[in-house]
Image (tube, rainbow, N blue to C red; front, side, top):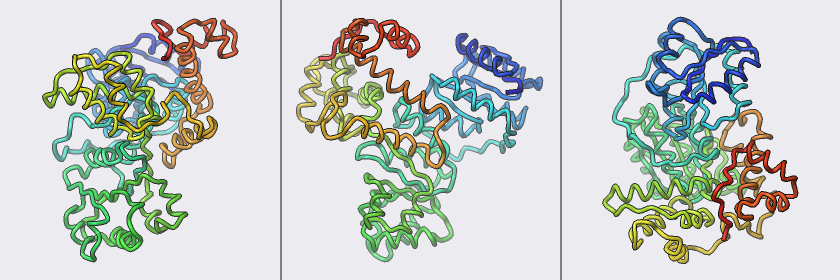
Length: 455
């Protein structure tokens, strides 16, 4: 790589790592913990690429992007942030950041993105859009796992396109919330958002009434795979001739739409019109680390609505992580709200969680591994979904090592839990040398203190 990179991050370790890595790659580096200093460098004409954190001691990195674009049109800015929410991804996209990576980031991946930014000129951004109306401070999408981060980035990319969007996922995963988020943060946010079912299109005048309601906003067709063929044909005609005010079309489906098309349940012409962009929403069992975060979110929302303040004990958290939640986020929300209302004390106990889960469908725990699917089949399913989350784009380079790391880290953590934190027993269980285990614990930043054996 050849060029000058400006690095702004309040974490000295990150500044050191990036400085060393970029210098070894052939770049000149200026690193600072101050946005004021970064903006001075930009104003002086320094730097070919900027790598900036969001939350800094003297300001917000995202808020500096319009000023950077004004002072230095075409200067690529790569945003890195520990605030791994859909809001961050959307704000970065709206501010026309060159790229966005959540922390902790993969260093080789960041280096390759920096190299691409140095090699190509970024187009000069247009003037910032005037905000067309009030926007919510927070979206009801919670999650920090890699699956959700990939989802956030995809939502940010398709947000202001006119492509139809097909949103797939199991019942209760939040497909309608994703559709609403795309609308609420798009250029159509001041126009209507209308959800319709097959019943709304049953008669011949149905499409005309629907288009009159949506008036160029966003039209969401719920569970498109359940719509009968005659109504599917009407939807095709409606998409081909929507009238003067062209809406954006979205649809949701619990089933694999491609498979439904192959079985003749979905028309080919409708399938190809709707799948301009495909958004696959992960099931809750595919993002287990988000479960405690979601539970806290639902308890806090219940408290905001007037319920008593409640929190889950460590044992209760471990138990809800182990359950597979076939009803996904919706089932988790209902269970947590019930716990918040029925708990005898401020801290919700494991026994209380067991009572609530006792009335839920009996399925294999997340960590239990069912007999109906081989591990290789499960891994293949997760990998295919990971690729699907990126739509028509390939995942970032370095996939092999990234996947190995994501499998290796939980394997070691679970083995340590199972052996009560005894590294000698854990190494024997895994069939590796104890020194190798220690090195992997260090490299993967695995916490080994206060580990409890799984019950």
